[in-house]
Length: 276
Ligand code: SF4
Image (cartoon, rainbow, N blue to C red; front, side, top):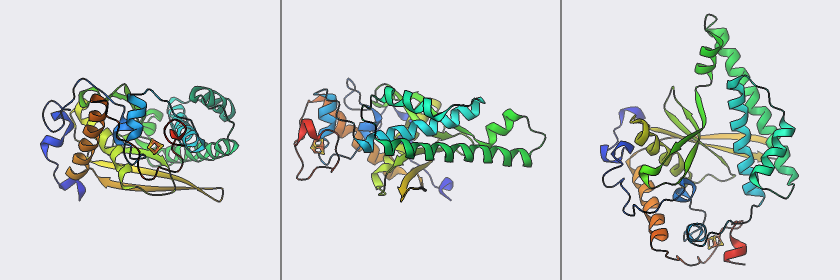
């Protein structure tokens, strides 16, 4: 049904060179995570990172989110490459790369659960496809049972975004952009991430990308829970993404401190440098 509904052409990524997709402030660029973020009620995090150069303090929530993303990416990409990777050595290397100094034992255990879950899923999908298509080559079976570009690196420069973006997952058979969130609460604004990535993919490959999916990873009493929020990337979401991007580009271009909100996000990583 969603695929029968139209999207305004001016909101397709391939129209990056004209309004409303063309950024008003063309001399500044921001990372996707800040363009979409609504963790800080006044967007002061954008000012702190982009104008003041603050890095924030990695807490357990951020360490878990980053490590889980990497675990999923590593397992799927190694599986597609036909390589085995040991969890323990991968985990130690990941902590070093993320510059996480605290041990956060719970992060390790949860990562291990996600690692095993992802591997078993990959294996099951492949075996199922091979049993359905016995004449396919291994390469064909892999490409159709796990049709994912994981941590796909693209540039969002045409849309005012900085650096290389890493898209959690793009299903190239069905044209779905996945974004993983380690979160207990569902947030409407999490849909901005797949929306932004879809627009970027459209700006580069000039193909329509209409479906997004936020994959929620939760842990309830030690058990892994995975929920999916699948949605149509409609005009409203696209316009919302553009509005958020423009608001944040303005903060950076004008070096405008948006000030403190009445209440801060409980575990904001900038509390130490922003509000005690
Ligand atoms: S401490 Fe408060 S004002 Fe500062 S970035 Fe975090 S949420 Fe925003």
